Length: 326
Image 1 (cartoon, helix red, strand yellow):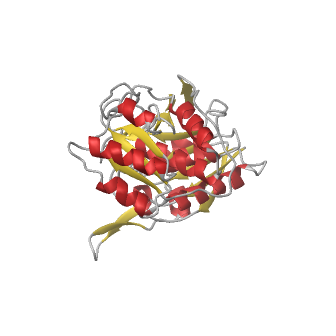
Image 2 (cartoon, helix red, strand yellow; image 1 turned 90 degrees about the vertical axis):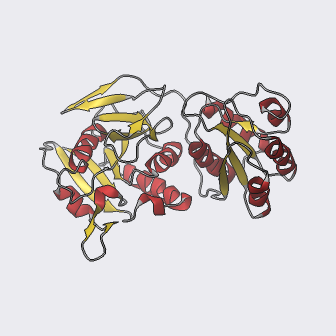
């Protein structure tokens, strides 16, 4: 019998309506989530571990870091063959990527959740958990890194993002595509991720700010972040990785202060590359800005927080971000 640990953190999958207030809040226990599974899971023994019970919009990087270490602890048990984490969809991709960078085992780790609350007439949580348990217990999922399983598909933590506020097929991997699918009791793998690395660290540096640019964005956000404790700054820039002239000048000044600046794109697809001069990407990279390939802004922030926790050199910080950016 395959033993799977179900780690619960809250989210929509564990939420229900409070009639007195009209609020939907995360209050369903891990035991209740386990009991909601209707499909037969013959051959599986499931242990429940309640890590927390909050909406994922209330999580922060230190909590995601502790969750990754909890996963490592469960996987260190030789009897545990895989872990399923139930999590709110708002920041699931960030917690999953944090875990992907920190989990040391090649045993399957699968994040899942729901778009419909626990007490709605048509909750999607039970099937997502059932599919995730089957995925976490499969030989096919070993070595794939941390996965997100939703609506019968599973994705690599590095690539996946929430694409729709409410639809049950919200998670996509853009031009990279899903890794595979769960069809009943069968797990089918279509591709395997290549850009992966894992790190061992006892701390992270959570003070990494993320700034998204729009037409005419001034330098005040960047300078404010630098003057108020930011250890690094990630920019979601234009197109291939460009910024407004004032942001470009501010980035150069911030880097001189010893604060790393990382460039990503606000585009949904494609990678950043320094091409344009006169304040564009070429000017930025000449000033020392690190270009993060096709990593999203939130994922680049997660990676940077881990690398800063490792106290890597400036050159290694650049090398690691550029490598994992693809």
